[in-house]
Amino acid sequence: MLTYDGDMRVLSGIQPSGTIHLGNYLGAIRTWVREQHEDAFYCVVDLHSLTLPIEPAALRQNTVECAASLLAAGIDPDKCTFFLQSEVQYHPRLSWLLECVATMGELNRMTQYKEKAEKSLGKVGLFTYPVLQAADILLYDTTHVPVGDDQRQHIELARNIAERFNFNYGDTFVVPEGTFPAAGARVMDLQQPERKMSKSVSSPLGTVSLLDSPEDVIKKVKKAVTDTDAEVRYDRKAKPGVSNLLDILAGLHESTPSAEAEKYSRYGDLKAATGDAINDVFGPIQQRYATYMADPAEVLRIMSRGAERASTIAEATYRRAATAVGLVG
Ligand code: AQP
Image 1 (cartoon, helix red, strand yellow):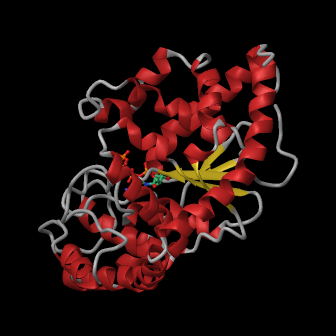
Image 2 (tube, rainbow, N blue to C red; image 1 turned 180 degrees about the horizontal axis):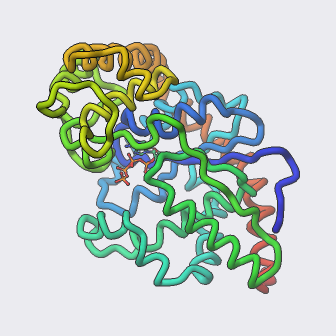
Image 3 (tube, rainbow, N blue to C red; image 1 turned 120 degrees about the vertical axis):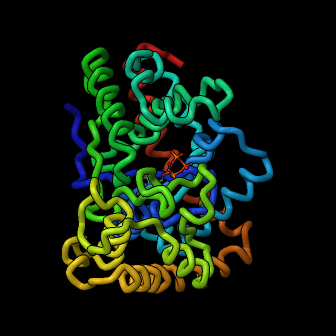
């Protein structure tokens, strides 16, 4: 198996499909900010956002807002490579080579496709985008992919494609692993705690946005669905709403849900503490966000500079793969 000769190469991305929410922050972005080094690659995956209906003007606006949010959250373009996926031409080019290795059977098994198929109006892109995601990852000889729990199946697919390609054409790709945070890996919708918090599903009271006012955060957490037995205990199955709040608190405090549960005996206190903890983290991010949004052109320039560096690495991997399959161009 091909190995990356540095210690660790990290890549992860986020779709500009709406405003970043608490799940994105706890599941992924917080880890990205912590793991910034010259071998870390973070991107706004705008090509993925085309898989569901989106107005061009909304996509443009979301792209700037998403990038500004990541910078405000602490992504430092001087420490890592931060870029816009569509500015690196090798992502779709490698995706095509991988589509000729992936099978209909494995893409048919993708649960996100099944969940979103109706909304996509039958677009082929929704069916094949997990392959584009595999290309995003494999292009950078990635060893680790820090993501939320919902991405397990996609990471497994990227691994399978890499292994099959290596088997068919000789050692070409590093086989990556997913890494998942201990708490906050799957933040659930506050109103429907059996469903994950998501950008592309409208649930105004169930989704805590990175840009919500402190009052809205407090209101949403106060209205979060719990249960009637009035016991603060971590039990994802029996008590999904309460457990979600405990998981959020544990993620924000870098503790464990059970340790958080011991601090509270009343739902009201648990909710008040959760709302305050979110505002403590999101407040400073919102201030920096306003500064970045005052100069959107600079936000795009920052990503373009990152794309130049990303392209150098991506081109080398793409050429390796293209040569391996027999392309001479
Ligand atoms: N609820 C979540 N809890 C923890 N982590 C999450 N992530 C997403 N939702 C949660 C992680 O955030 C990163 C970016 O993922 P994304 O761009 O696919 O975000 P999304 O909110 O899931 O966006 P969409 O457009 O609404 O997609 P769907 O409809 O798929 O939910 C990833 O690392 C993801 O794991």
